[in-house]
Length: 265
Picture 1 (spheres, helix red, strand yellow):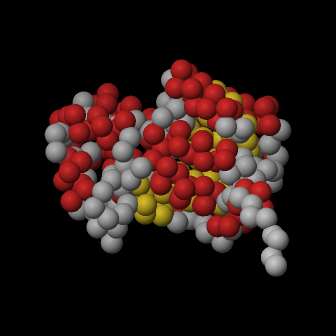
Picture 2 (picture 1 turned 90 degrees about the horizontal axis):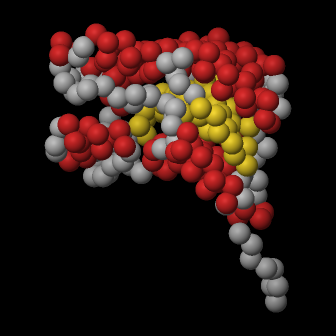
């Protein structure tokens, strides 16, 4: 008679990100917070970064209560010194950096490009393009100096892959992130640092809630264009980022992975 005792997967297998140190921007809410929870469950020690400290503290406390290892640092992606200091904090806390998820972003006011104030244009580009550029530079330096090899994932958007009359500057910034991702993959791949991006479709975050408030019906319109017929939960987007950062994606480099329910199929 078979007397083998059933065990949970966590008791018999290593987590997807076991023994890795992970840095996450935009980690106080939405996709970033979901990623922080997931990465910790998958065995990573995580440093959460965002502008809003109360949100960060709440997510960190949740992770710790579940038995994970997490801390937080305030970070403004529009401030280069703040970005570098946040990445350096991961090394100070945990002694190394293995993986990074550059998820932080800001929205733009929906509408035609000629109606967006120049100051708003500058802010969107400072956070959504210059921010990831600064973060990648700091992350590559930290990975190179500590772990030696690693992986980076940037959050793009399906809105970067097509005309985006609703959010033209947001889409343009995210398309530029795709280009930076490819360039970084080609530059740092030879030393074992992979760089990829994910392009989420309609996802139930505070950002999409704000867009719905400005443009009632937009979520239903976008969902109608999605073959799966629904919006994504932030945790579903986080799963894609976790896989790309893991060693199971060891030969994936320089790609933009659509996580959009088939909207761009």
